Length: 214
Image (cartoon, rainbow, N blue to C red; front, side, top):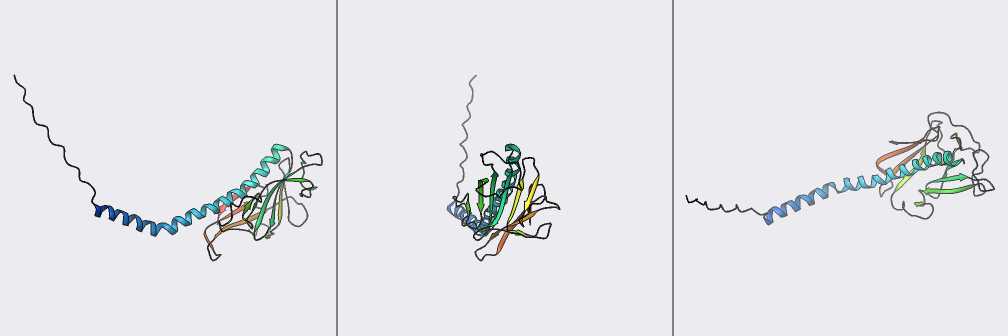
């Protein structure tokens, strides 16, 4: 019995995109970028704000971790630099070069301590060499803490045993209250006014930092 072959059906033709449709899509994408551009730019710039908070809080965490690990006291020195606050991490060393466990007998200068890291928001430099904060328009200021004070200069020290001390008046004291320092981080626009999300690094009496949105 002869088999009957059916003719194959021609494949359906696919419709392409017209030039008008392509131009319409391009116009819509352009409108989206124009409308969303300022918002996206603000989000990207707010990342610098968060990074500043992370690096400041990270310096306090490193101070505690290194003090416990090395057996030597570590201090975070906050000073009023040229045009902004400067944060510096230092490790206590003895005359023989070994670690010094305590905080209060130190001058925390080059005579008895070693500089490990610094962030200067006045000059925009990290470790006095890398200009990674220049042009980021980030301002860091001290604001009122649990003591009702806003000292621009303050030392936060962690002993080898994990005890915390702080000094803003020339006298070392054990911290009390809910915090021993608050630092407001702001992003500024071209006119110098704060914009976007603001963050606060709050240093607890134990010397442990907490980052909060303001």
